[in-house]
Length: 142
Image (tube, rainbow, N blue to C red; front, side):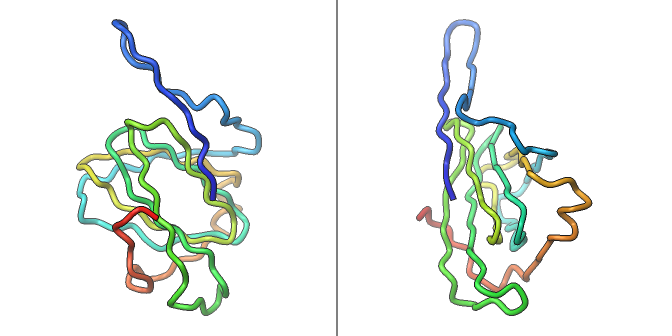
């Protein structure tokens, strides 16, 4: 996991949020996710091969991720790492291949953009999902 830091600039015309060190090399698609409810946890989905990049455009999200030890029968005591992304911070969270992730909105109607390095057809072949109860979602940032 890594975070690419960005910044903001505000003046009388408004605010610009940017992450100048992020390049779109290898990005093949993107989508947005909006969570109207802060009680909903969307977990656990991951990929052996796909990289995901998360950027919050409205509100904030707490994101958890776990490195998987065995894709057919993963351990239930794997280490969970958590990080908060917010519209007030201009940063992109990168979750590399080999991980599952889960997230929840910390504010109603929070929205984030997710970028992927795989086309949808390829991503579907690399899609692994586990029950939300399999690991305890960590409400604290690591």
